[in-house]
Length: 537
Image (cartoon, rainbow, N blue to C red):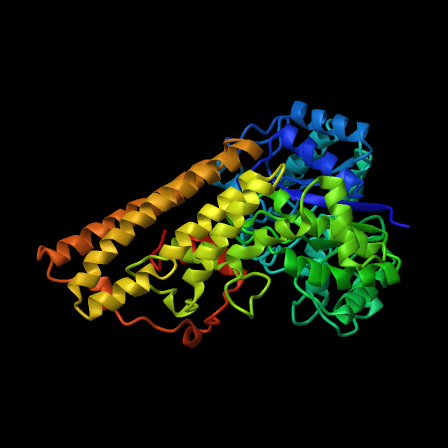
């Protein structure tokens, strides 16, 4: 029987959900068979005596956290704090209060520094005053360069395995001082134990390698959103169980590659994960809902995934039954909510992390460095998707605003998707009539982007605090200004005011020859700064 089945909500990628929305989401999860949420807050929570911690980031006040916890306790939903005590703290290092004192390198804390442990104790002490749960997630993932920055300057090159182990023991002491049972992401354990520095493996890992790093008084969280092979989950769980520690599994309900979710992949991968968890006796499970690169996607978009995954753990795989149950519980049509995936469904070999609806929205029409990724019939698909999602918006009882936002995004892409390629082709052919017609397309795209912005803004302010939307203003505002600028230069060229448009005379290189797949981009291209320009930002 399952002990914990929960969801981890990312509140650290600019969008901090309003407290009332967190409560509403928790109530919905409760109906879906969940009994726990984790609030992933890197520095978006108030810490006593640390005024710059989460400064201007929409951090939760201690009063807000207590209110969320009290409500969730009242409905039988445990709220577990999920923080970071080693890496992923880049936002605090913009302030000298931290960058000069506790920064090793990148987003990593400086180990063995007294001020580091003063900060961590302030964090844990403040969390303790807000949460009733005995559990705390202390993070510890992806600290790839730990010990190689200021730490190395101060102490020389040390055994990083021992350095991280020593830091872990200090953090565990602090957690236990405040009556917490800690859990941690397990990837650094594997990375430091394996010669190749990797995490996921089907190869056997010795018990000695596992136990050498990990104290017994911390739970290990195996996280995996990337695989759909049963044997991978089996091997990884078996390797974790060699530690003798309590093991948790964290899967993913994909919502962190732009505005659209990937429910289809979430179901495909987590069906196998739940089989493996059940057969290996893993009774503590949660799904991560990350918000990478600005958190454009509503967490409500993955409700069908969350319900189906919960039923998969119970051994139920009859999708028609799952769909009926989902409709009875939520009042929403399962298949309609699955169609929220559509903005990224433009090719048959879509990967879990492909997000053309984001990178082609921001793709610069004159630079064109992403044009090797174009799928020929995508504009027609986007036109159809816009109609489908607009219709679904009218039918949805609760989430019409999400469908409306994605419908308007698809409407933009039906014209913007290949705008750059069409511009380059017309310019290369010196077809002034075609260029003149494209001016009208630019005007239409600008109008559609403005409509999309209004819808997305309404979604954001409905669900989240205002902090962080400044980034979206800058991004979408920059897109609008760039489209207007390109339109003006095309007009000037056609009118003879410009002799040339130099960017359109560049040869476009194929991403495949540069080491990146042509049709489908890795989720590293979810980064706005990576797909909006080749120039430094």
